[in-house]
Structure formats: structure tokens, C-alpha cells
Length: 171
Image 1: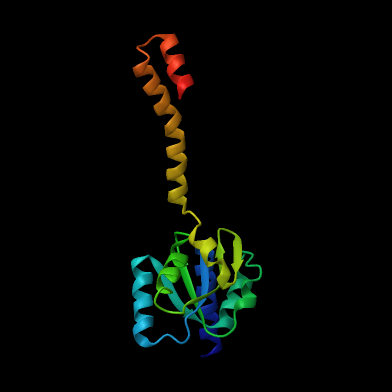
Image 2: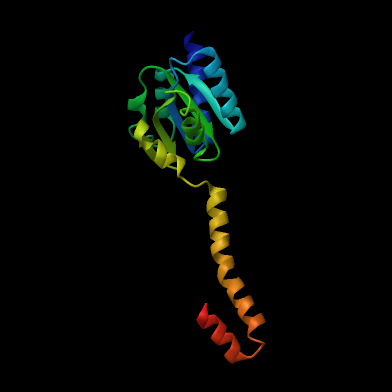
């Protein structure tokens, strides 16, 4: 690989890192061709982009990025694959589901919404992170609940103030 090609790869990786808030680093070494193909298929179905990267080039891209990756560059040893997704927990779910049949991939670390997670022991915490859409759904559900109570009280109270207050106090 020439110096120009390396520079281009670093620029591309830096742009990818700038465009996403979810980056997972995993070790998929030792997977046979069938398992690797199955992992790539699982990633594709979950809208997760999987790419094998060179550690030195990714480290330079992380340095060039404006984001603070904390201890993540220190995990760049051995075989490294980068998983990128819009949903913050999607790569963790793919890894966890795939590990039901295989020992790999091993999670090296993750950068999720400015938080850094290092080590395979963080996988369960990452799976449990709620996506933006899930959080919005929870908030809407919480906001709708009091409004439903008021509407219900108005309907069952017979439009009398005492009936409405009685129904609301019971709920």
C-alpha cells in the first residue's frame, strides 16, 4: 500500500468516524469463511456496517477526528473489525446473538454517543442501551398516560367537578 493510498484510507476512516455516533471494535479472527459470511449477513440485516480495518490507520483516523475516543485506541491490537450503525445498540445485539453459536466476535470496545466502553464485559450494558427511537417512544408513552387519565376522569365523572375529582383521586 502506497503512502497516498494509506492517506486516502485514513481520510475515509476519519470521515466515517465524523459521520457516526456509534462505533464498535471487535475481534473476528478465527472465524471460518461460513461463519464470517453469516456474521456479515446478520450485520446487513441489522443495518450494521462491518469492515476489517488496519489498526495503525484506524488509530491515525481517531487521532485526526474531533471526537474523544478515550481508551479505545489502546484496544487496537491484533485483528480489528469496525462495526458502525445508526442504532446505538444494534452492533451489540448482533454480536450477542452471533455468540450464541460461536465464541467470536469478541468486543474490544465501543464509542456510543460520546461514551467509551472498553472490554468484552461491557457487551450486556451496550445491548441494554435504548435507541433514540425507543427513548422517544417511552417519553411519548409517559406523556400520554396523564392525558388519558384526565380524559377518562372527564368521561366517567359525568361532567361534574366532584365526580372528576373523585375519579382522579382514585387513580
